[in-house]
Image (cartoon, rainbow, N blue to C red; front, side):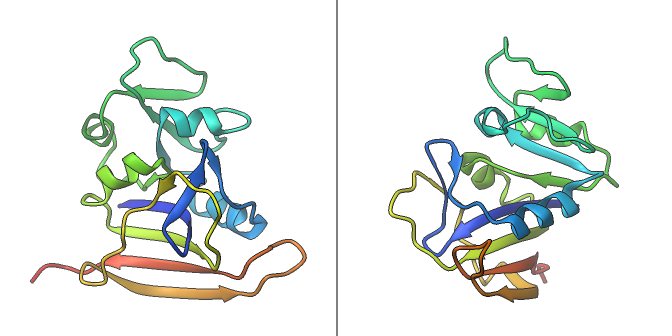
Length: 165
């Protein structure tokens, strides 16, 4: 199973200057709960944005064309195809960013775990691909209001790819 996971603003924005747009503790908790014990695949810049490097309790795969790049606790591949080929068919794989990797991986994904944030940021330079309702359907949706720890209302939405007939 290949899934993509992201927090996405109303305009599709996901980042600015290689940083997440939102600090949502419940989103981070959901991310950890879903990805722990599984494989995560990310681009090099996404990896470099992680404050402590490789995420614990996960197989960390980093994609880069930089042949001299190395980091503790990660496997390095030069392409998404190469990385996916190194994963077993029963492995749960999560694509965690960035924007160009999300676009490249969209055709391979079977599930999207999206946190939709009810906001349009003033600045953004990275965007999630459009979620086409002809391709994806909502399996589950959980809405949350803004509170003392979350500046904006948000929804956890799980999408599954519609099967081709």
